[in-house]
Length: 394
Image (cartoon, rainbow, N blue to C red):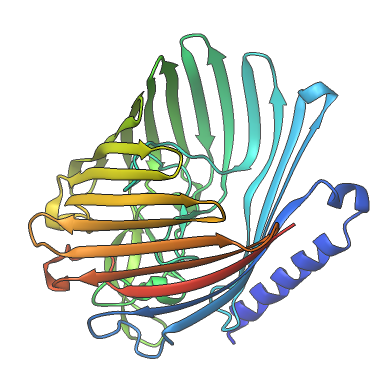
């Protein structure tokens, strides 16, 4: 195990021990989950890291505390996340949230680590750009990292306005197989390249207006600062091997999200325009959801990115079809992304089941069908994976 991995494991164990010996009055306010996960990952082409085992496992702890004082005038939010990887590389302690808030009748002020969500579409979350993503968690890579910020919210009859000041940037993680899913080289996250001379300390900001008008939910946002999604540049690791180094550009990102609910139909749209190297681009994801009773939801959406083969995503001209079946003790979700140009296809399946009052099991699988050489050069490698996770709720 590397020195970094050993330090991360010790930190994780100390965090778990700290929760275990917390005062009873405080511990009683916690909600927590403990999960054990195993995952196998495969690639249709030569592996970017031949020495990397196709098997990954992890033990994770998610906890949360929400405490208010003075009749709800003050609040504390605390959500630590601990992951222990037996191989050491993906072990880490993170804060999803650690913030204090001052709440008024028509305004709120929060300072600290927060986790925000913006967006409406099912197939992609294009406007959701404040929090960085932790790719070491799951193959689909959509677990967020807590973002330090100052968040002032004004609540008015004509809408809600969020003003964010973001003083510190968090780099994307590429632990385990996440670092090997960009063809043809592995990503070395230890040597990031920044467009800004201030590096992580480059000051960013964001503003968002949201409102509900009858059946419409609307959001309009703008982010300015170090963009969360990196590009990649050639580099060498400590052993002299060729790798890809993440490059973080500075730019602006303007987004629109809409949702219209009419009976069993829900119409959704996310559209963004961003200014970054090599130039401004436009991307969108939108379509509809149709509900059948309380047990089935069907989705159909289209994804577009004006960068085409220069995009950092595989979904630059794709159709998405999916469904979610709700069962008394669980749910089944399936989806397919179909590239209109190449006919390359990505299939996904997730099955979750409740075992008693406090235990769940979840099976996830995904696979790629097609020619990976016809995918965008800097998109994630097309791969197959299967994971099994057992979660205990407290």
